[in-house]
Amino acid sequence: MKSTSIKLFVFAAILIIASAFVKPEKPALHTIGDSTVRNSNKETWGWGTPIAALFDTTKIHVENNAMAGRSTRTFLSEGRWAKVLETLKPGDFVTMQFGHNDGSEPDTTKAGRRGVLKGTGEETKVLTWPDGKVETVHTFGWYIRKFVRETKAKGATPIVVSMIPRNQFKDGKVLRADQSFGKWAAEVAQQEQAFFVDLNKITGDKYDAMGPEKVKSFFPGDHTHTNLEGAKLNAQSVVEGIKKLNGCKLKNYLL
Image (cartoon, rainbow, N blue to C red; front, side):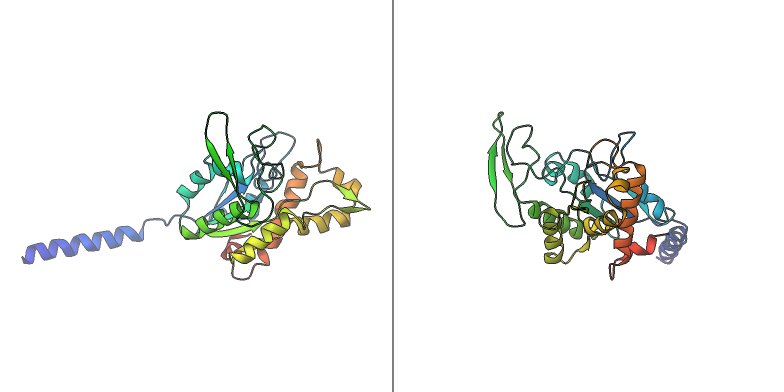
């Protein structure tokens, strides 16, 4: 009996000593969104790629999980969110920025397969695909709310981010999304007590100060996708927003 107790004590001591040498797993920052967050085009970039350089990656792992062409609806229906969710652990962070691909009328056509219902309510639209599959489409806010709640359930921290402005000006001022997707993102963040970075406003203010001619240099092909210089500006805007979030531990990993 005494011998068994000694063996158990020695085994426990070995485990304690060994655990002291095990390097704790770093927290991760996951970005989810569309091509304005991640883009594989050689001329255009999403801000989720250059933002890694603004963090101390010896202390946090930065992973860009966004995918070009996706809306909240298709990011979920294609199983991309499920893959992110599988890897989330307590202490991780998720930034979520959508809106550029969510605006079409939701249906089963090529044009409407990404569309969602407007607003943040519980309205739904039931679609039947040609193969007989039935899909229930929700509001933009419903999808963001789902991402937020499931992130929290994993012990991770959700950060809702409003979409970057497009290169569209009226009377010398860039057009904002503060009455549509930007507004709805903010509403969900407030309702769910999640952190919110108003990227649409932060970058929009910078665009207004720069003027249309300078901003045009960020957009080599269209009015939505930025070059690397523009992506870096947006990444810096995200970081500026994070720094202003009271109680958000993600700022502790910034350089």
